[in-house]
Length: 615
Ligand code: M6R
Image (tube, rainbow, N blue to C red):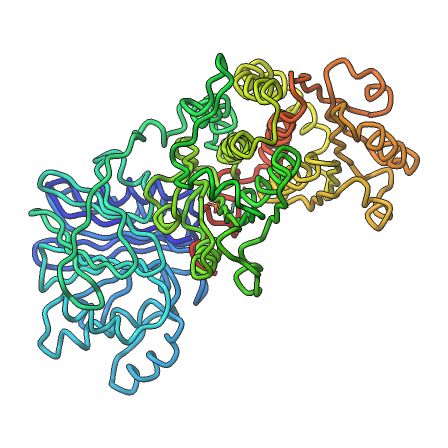
């Protein structure tokens, strides 16, 4: 979604804004703009397209030593992507600007009223009404903070907002309602941004604004108020462990590739301190539930979107097998409009990389009202989902910048693997030696991944050469290889724009088999597990219809080698339950190489946003 940055301090404001917007590019955008105050005047530069265009337009302006300003990358919702609709949006007097992420639901009515009152609109966005409303209430004699508050009483919808007015040239006003906004605390400077990477070059002391917070940022510091009452509120800053280098490409062509290669470390970071391989033990102190509550649970619900939903689907197989408890895996966007039957014996586990996904958040709010304990699995420390959940298992994967989720997925799997083992240990449903085998298998996973990454990458390049011109792909798997097939198909479609479908292999006969002909590449995931023979039969069915079989199977599987046109070898782990980790990584690499061969914008695929903070 849209990216917002803001700065007050002694640095050259335009460089801070541009650099900040650059590090938010991954969120997806179609236009960009900045505004700053210089010599008492408000300057505004916007353009359609990427940041290079904005940078070109700013070249004529010389650098200043200090400043105040706001910037924005826009992902269009209301109004086509062009310069006029780009943020910042300005009022009639040309003295006030706003940048906004979110949606103003009643903007049409507000716009009609403001037009009647004589305001002139330049854009067709919902955001512009906010600039005019604040202008209206400033003219009534209010100060900036009062005018912003009054204006927002008229507004329905979601917003992360930054406001700058030349009548108060030493401060920015920030407001948050249902859209993330993070403030960076410096010595005699202050920053705001919609995501952490924009702040990392300057500070690691961050305040995550809460819903209904207003803040005034100035060189003297940041003050917080309640939007509703106007009373001051206390907010504490968190010092985060991420640093700026973690949000850079480090020599890789794309963030996605870097993040694929970071997976051994990401998985290690997730289990570090939580599993103890030598003594076969597992600890999860962050689960704030007594053993009696854990023993009394009668259902688990995973709640998520996209790739995070796939992680929940994989975990269902583990947890039902090890813990013997029913597991439901819900798409948050559907779940929030259903009428689920919940109580305090149902553990709800939202899974989210960003911790800001609007649908997942709405689902959490719904289940909390019904008394279910909420344990989130999340990557971003301090994000909204972690604040609203009762407890959180952090994945510690480090910043994920590529829109296509990779290391966040494998680290979610690691967290879920640990959660499943922990529950089975507390409920006494797993034998000690089985627990030990699984802990050792997880502990050995980073080494296994490390050993195969380069080989898989080479194979992915070969497959990309062969298949990058195809328009359709089918991915098949059984058991927990079914969600991995879904994930392989999602990776391919989102970054290469090739139509790809993931299917449970046993369902093939019920429809998709009609698609198979000599042009159709079929990716078959076939580890030697309890459904291997079934998978082999499915591969035969594809072959008999002349489909092109690309099999992912165990090292040394000669049977598969005879049947498939292409084989990607995956190591046999000490415990087969670890297979989802091992099969998804070569699929990510294949998707990456195919997208790169097609010349696609891998890190910022069209129409997609990294974190979906609106419905
Ligand atoms: O931040 P979240 O994990 O809540 O995001 C969920 C999905 O938006 C995300 O996984 C999306 O599907 C990715 N583009 C997949 O690569």
